[in-house]
Length: 188
Image (cartoon, rainbow, N blue to C red; front, side, top):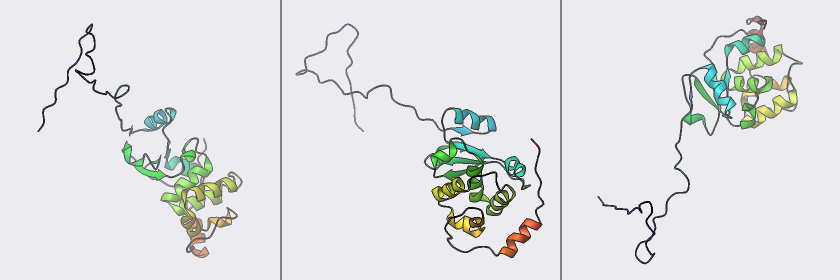
């Protein structure tokens, strides 16, 4: 245990000569207070996005609207450096590419979906040909390092130039999945 005492000058007093008292260096500005973002609802996601926090929410509604009827709890995609700092009731999935979270479009959401459900990602790409830019999808898959998952569901059929990394599911299995998941879209 140690005793520390600091003298403070009262208002109106003149400073003491440096030979008698040395001023204690103080931190510049006010001390910063850290906060942990809390995300409990869609409104919270929008509020934090307006403040510049790199995050996005993937819902089953988006997947269903794009032709693959599926139900799941919403997933919160957060920039990897912040993923451990966000408190949320949603499952938090880290994203390497901060730019992907600024204004996520179709290609970004397909990449996010690829991280959690590869077959759904393939189905959405298959059922929305012409709606996405293959070059942008290529870039997003490479930026996230998802070549192995993309290869597993043969995304190279839709994204030219995407390297084949690892094993691919047999075409017959992918055709079976496609046959047994009817196409359905939800009108806006």
